[in-house]
Amino acid sequence: MPPDAPSPQAPLTLHVPEPAVRPGGNPSFSDLDIPEAGAVRRPAVDVAAADIRDLAYTLIRVLDADGNAVGPWAGSLTDEELLAGLRDMMKLRAFDARMLMAQRQGKTSFYMQHLGEEAVSTAFRRALEPGDMNFPTYRQAGLLIAGGYPLVDMMCQIYSNEADPLHGRQLPVMYSAKDHGFFSISGNLATQYVQAVGWAMASAIKNDTRIAAAWIGDGSTAESDFHAALVFASTYRAPVVLNVVNNQWAISTFQGFARGGSSTFAARGHGFGIPALRVDGNDYLAVHAVAKWAVERARRNLGPTLVEYVTYRAGAHSTSDDPSAYRPKTEFDAWPLGDPVKRLKDHLIARGAWSEERHRQGEAEILDEVVAAQREAETHGTLHAGGKPSPRDMFEGVFSEMPPHLRRQRQQAGY
Image 1 (tube, one colour):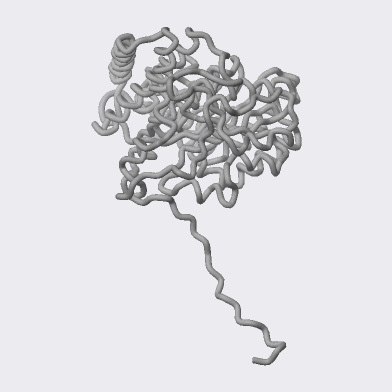
Image 2 (cartoon, helix red, strand yellow):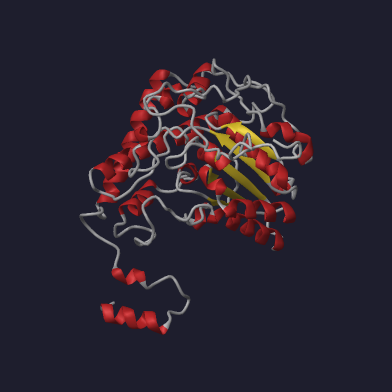
């Protein structure tokens, strides 16, 4: 080969992320760095984003292995508030179980569980004030339950019956409740992230006091709307909390695809100058404390905060999904951050504010409440039986003045 001849190059290769374990393998979360509870510092609310870069790479935790609340993020909730939070999570779990069973019985076409993620939405909701607006995904029903929204109305929406508050216009579990700070869920992923920032900007323009909360899953952060939302939130210092629920799995792909080359989802806030924190999403106390911190920043005109909640989707993505096709069946059992309900229960028992007997009694009382709500909802109909929304509703509530072509179609349909 002549001295000036180019050296042969190796062929290019494409990197395709691989989950640590496939179905049939032994679950492993060895790549998840979990600091001791109470080890992560709590900065001042008005801290500069550049001064807390480390908080996007660690994990804020309050509850230790013995159920004790430790560290600088602990101590913000009373026993009564903690008991209310436990009941919120227990109610969401019982609601999930009944609605999943209803779907299997053919009473509704579709359902999505929250199993393993109950602390994220219920604790966050308790950190908000009336009038604040959430822009949720389909796995934040805990915002409604912790906010006191009627279970019967939620079930009627799932059944798409004659008492459905949305008149059959939305897929099951895609709720909408303006009075409860719950913006209409969109089936198009990530669209609401940028809408939340716009709503927050509008609140600031009007000199209002209300803030917004944006919600997105780890998989949907790969959508362009996620990045557009961060640009606007950063540029205009919008009063918004940008929540990323990292439950390890999108519909059938692990978080490595959406996360890309970044080591955490929270770290994405750095490129936009947005303060970013990462929290143990199965620790009710930690979620609430971080939520209060971020909400206060927004309320004090200090701008947006990006929060990543590290949790685990224990159930299927939806009733149309079979997770055994892409992950080990025992993976949730190996999840090192545990069960959020059990962890808060153990904490309250350690404080002397709860007991195993009272917990069993509470489970029975909550189940009775959920079953009674289900019976009432089913008197209004289910997917295949009973009352249905009127076809007239297809034409109503879209335009302030119905266009002539829709008026003609309604007349042709006999409504």
